[in-house]
Amino acid sequence: MLAGAFALLATVLLVLVLREHFILLQFRSDVRFGCDIIWGFHADRDLALKGDIHRAGLCLERLQVAPSSRPFTNPLADLIESERKSAIREIIAGLRAKTGMDYGDSPKKWVDALEGADHGKVQWPPPSPQTN
Image (cartoon, rainbow, N blue to C red):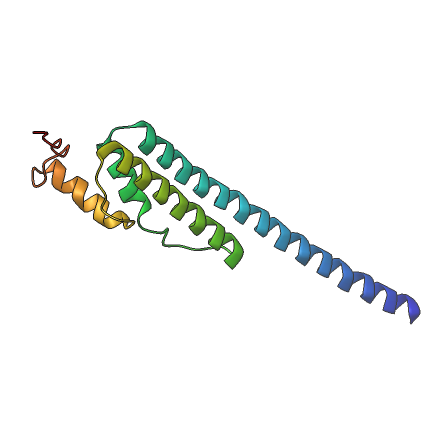
């Protein structure tokens, strides 16, 4: 009787340990995937800051929409979103420095302005101020 109880207890403990192991594996997988996404944000930011304004606009357009699927726990999703917003802020700061223009903090306004420049709706680069 006592041996049967120990066998049952050992089986339950083994199942619990295996369950926790699989939860840990899933968490590690999520963290790796999250790191890959963040690496992509940093790569887009670097391309935007090193490239011309057209390249910066393309990178900003790609970053302005949050990834649609969120297979992560809340803290990891929050970290990914924070890194995305940080990359957007840095690209906008770079665009302000390169163009001398300020369309605010909204990436959509910047993308629209840069697309208008590509289609001849906006004079780009902006005219330099004339001195008298």
